[in-house]
Length: 356
Image 1 (tube, rainbow, N blue to C red):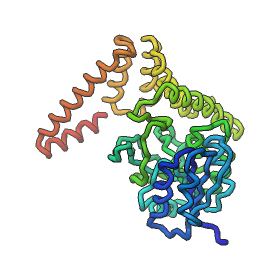
Image 2 (cartoon, rainbow, N blue to C red):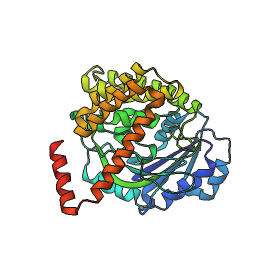
Image 3 (cartoon, rainbow, N blue to C red):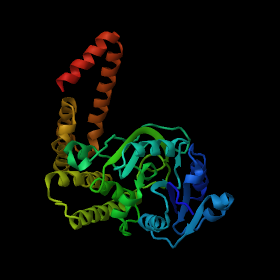
């Protein structure tokens, strides 16, 4: 049997209510489906996932295993995958119809690219799509450029596509990672191969109450926070272990600063569980411009240091006063700019850019 071009790996656990939409979104691709295999790795679901998938017949391969977590499901699927490229899709997400077409076109542009990623819409339960998710288009040899390294984003599972030989250099994924296995792959792939960013919305990331990083109303519960903090600790340990094993100096300044994003996220989550004292919070805030200042505009740097000072003055629990006042000032400034004639407004923007 001829190997397919793409293997679509859908990992699922008790997401029967979403799995049909995920599979249908792959079958609806504007791409030759004879060049695509769909693997659904069921990580020990106890709901009606298997029954719901019967309707797809031989269009998919359904692989059921004992529950072991996301990394375990990935490893199981990677071992079965036959495609040249492996595209990941969470069972509660869905792709837009041009996803595989656009990704393949991007891959044809750079035979060295080990991973491609793209934008995703946020899709809450009401179905209204949002563009609020973070995205930074960073392509090429990321580790060769400090600014690229510090800008490089950790994107959602459903926007990641890997070249098979690149993925083999990162496998197996440590199975201690019951979640955040996608972050492990994303974090380390840049040390193996160049990456490509496609600045287009090609998938929908569903936001619901059981997301690791989004609760039903966008707020994580205490149990979700504790879970993702525990997994983040394991994630960083495994990233550092891989880097050391492959001859990377984890104490080099750029690598050390790259890894600080997880420490900062860990600190922010811990504050949601227990508010820090003012000095601790100040140190947390002032470190952002210290690390990322070269990526910021002058205005952003000033704002960041002002926010750190406000944290020291107001404390964590009252920081919303500063943030609300800042948002109001930005709103007034935006309103004033809208009242400026277009030619003047354009010149003002050019002047601001030249001064930053």
